[in-house]
Image (cartoon, rainbow, N blue to C red; front, side, top):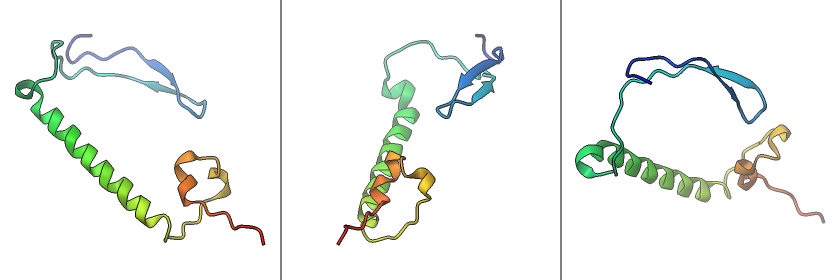
Length: 92
């Protein structure tokens, strides 16, 4: 693709099985290179910040999920990301 060109329609199947259609516009093009600080500082900085935020969020969820009540709709019982929020009462 050339810079500022728009792709043909791309059909994509999402995890739920639905089909979506996308158009891609190429805004800029960089020649292939190994990542380095002089050319990629902003991207590296953003990736480090995102990783730090994600770690803080995971830590917070880990602390709160044992002491916070969250009602999860039964339709989402099979979601692996919500498993830590589920509490199953032991049978007497």
